[in-house]
Figure 1: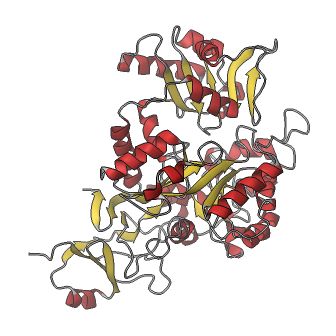
Figure 2: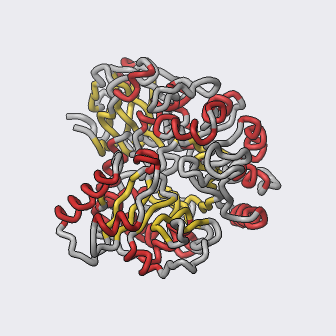
Figure 3: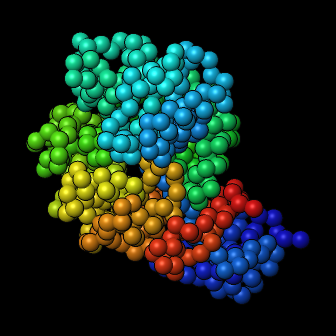
Length: 526
């Protein structure tokens, strides 16, 4: 009979991510904690009653840490029509009609589709209201772009939102218009996120069950700490209720919308910067610009093609950004800031008149220039890179910025050379929370079209893993608890089919997550 909740892992490569003992023979887990790492026979003698877990040649690593995503939105999207990979308007219309048929949705009921990418459509044009009206007559239709920064709606939704020819663009957003000046159904940035939110129903079908399913998806990718990176009242309340009910299978760190929901931490004090039921509020989130693939990121050197001199646009003034940064610092709260373009990055950096003591995070940092990195280090900012852009939108970035600028997308290697802590993410639901995909993209830096973006910014699998483990823990101020397999730390583990540092770079996507352990208990895998 094995000693209750004592496990001895051995029989395969162990990668602790702890420099003190990087590749031990075995790991001993006692309860929720790692008790010891070291030689197998020594640990067997120390714990003769431990349950043996033979890795059978598979690799054991620390549980992966999601540095930025939107867990609740990812879970909610499970109830919507998936348009990911649709490469024609006919395919979008087919999927929407099939979704309506399968779910028996009555006319007049909103239909939501997510994940389309205009870069995959003929002419790289967004669907119009006329297309949506014809595809689903009598239905209010909303399509969300894969980036989350734009979308399109049918005429019924425009009417519900009160958008007409006379409606002005909101600050930090744009209403698409046809040649006659009439709204064409395309909405960009705040015109999409804020106006659509007001028009569509706030309630989410079976929200707690969807959240359960969403968590399982994260666990299936080896993630043991996840993020909800832009909480409003509904997201915060759902996570708080799930935490109180014991329904969170992984740790969730939430960040409140600072513009409209800065009071949330005060209304949920039990979760403010500390876990209760595996949920905590880590700080605030703001947006400074948009999406490079959607040509709304704010850059210093103009985009190629299109309107001459076009550089995207900011969401806030410099004074407003300084106010956000100062307010978060005064509260002792971490601030996550969405910056895709180098102009947005410069605005965020300039707002740091003193170094961040809360480890503020520059989210995405796609077009952060290598010459800006010393200022990032001086400001105490952590860049969190969406490095999978190299594969999924690399060809689009070459068209928008040219090959040389595209090669510096997510400048990970320069970040490593300067000794700056960094993290990686997939911004789910923009992309699935697949950590092996992150590794593949960080190491290979190749576009879908086969163009190499590796020159200068390619890193090793081990360096990429640091961005998913030790530096992820550092970003959350949890380096004493997570990120490596070391005695005393939480026993968050992932079992992989192979050691990512020992396979060919091209084979990284074939490495599978076979089991995930949260605080010593298996939560995914046979």
